[in-house]
Image (cartoon, rainbow, N blue to C red; front, side):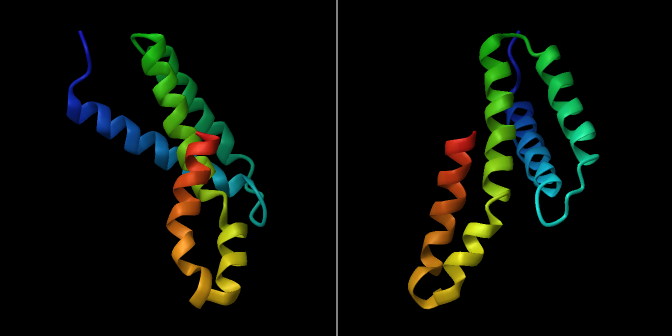
Length: 101
């Protein structure tokens, strides 16, 4: 029995958020204990997945949130000349999320 569409999008949102929260383990905050919680929840959901395709999706959305939110250093560099490069920020967020997801 497959997941309902509402449940799929909720899981994607939660996993993207967990990936985004995991970005706090990187510089400049270095709050590494957060990884025990976020990766623990990721592994729990992957173990409960019904198929390998769903498990891959869980890992992708977690990586998308992590990759998108951990690129603040890139956004900061683009905002030095915000008039010329600020329009690139959404593309960098999605592109880095897709790259790392």
